[in-house]
Image 1 (cartoon, rainbow, N blue to C red):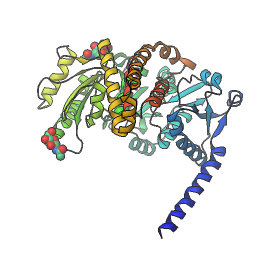
Image 2 (tube, rainbow, N blue to C red):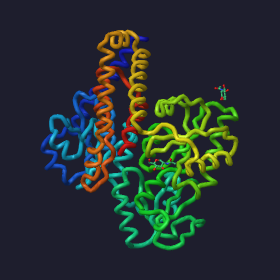
Image 3 (tube, rainbow, N blue to C red):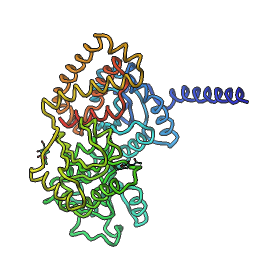
Image 4 (cartoon, protein in one colour):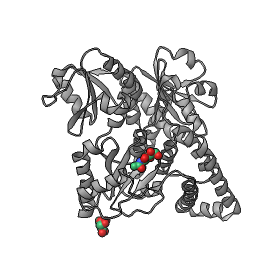
Length: 456
Ligand SMILES: *[C@@H]1O[C@H](CO)[C@@H](O)[C@H](O)[C@H]1NC(C)=O
Ligand SMILES: *[C@@H]1O[C@H](CO)[C@@H](O)[C@H](O)[C@H]1NC(C)=O
């Protein structure tokens, strides 16, 4: 029985392997120099990889699945991959600086993907960016349908206007993050009243908000601020994304599985503040909760015990802790006001001392994680003086790369399109580090990206 089962499994695996090998040739095109000439008429989703890079190898099976599914869906998007080390001049023309880099190339525009590297997320991205910039919602039924599927929904309401041109322009840049719709006023739900037409409206948090040029500043930064729900379940990746908004992030750090009053209370306090004080705080604050304190502790290099509340400044890496127990919404509002008027004491930051602390902290956690995953390797690596020297080199190396931010700035504006941060090159460095030490968890990776990114 067992043997037969095993054999069947083996056979299954062989079939899958054969399929993958065959499909690899068909569904994911291996690109070379000719790509530059031949790509013009098509939309391409390309994985720029390096043969030696571990993250690229991890992406490969996912990429094949993406290729298969896009083909099966009849998507007009072609899926390819390019060895960016063999065709480095083309890769650098496309602004590839780290591996793997995923880009969607559409005419003159190149859109970077930097979300989670899963099949569904990548495909969703490709469909969104490759599709029409502005999707019309011609009927109430369609509007309701779309509203159910999108927790944050941007809609342009009205006819041709300078505002619409602006909306299209912003969409061509921010389509990497969210969808853009348009509708006529009679398609909107009845509870919506617009002060004037044309208007840009965002539907979220069970209500809607209308863009006001005078109060909200330019449309692009308004959309960037509003593309999150008022209250979020925050994880490392969300935090990384929130870095773009420059907002302060107020989170309850709790244990989601702990149903004791203490945990649920902090969460509902933050929820209440997010809802009831939106007009006061939403310009400067994002609210949410985070499950567990591992991530936040390694980000802040602190030792917070849950449940607690912490407010992070995403633009300078400082953070604030309440100096007394937060019992109710009023306490929280008072705490926020203290932060805004400067009476709350900031901790952390991105100063020199913090950077040194980060180097030591990282070295320490690398050693710990090596020992945890493989004690023998740990002894071998770190028992030798060589180990110590490598840590020091690693420290100096990290300190050096911390300074290399101007390059980001320069390449950001490429193709008249927003180049997202160089998460890739960060990973490239990670890669080298990894060869010497051990696997860092994804969490740590993301967290480093947050730190790098803030300096942009
Ligand atoms: C839940 O949280 C409380 C207060 O922090 C703590 O005392 C308790 O041990 C936790 N319970 C569980 C099951 O983790
Ligand atoms: C957050 O950081 C920015 C950039 O350093 C600073 O201008 C701002 O005042 C900080 N906010 C608070 C509340 O400390």
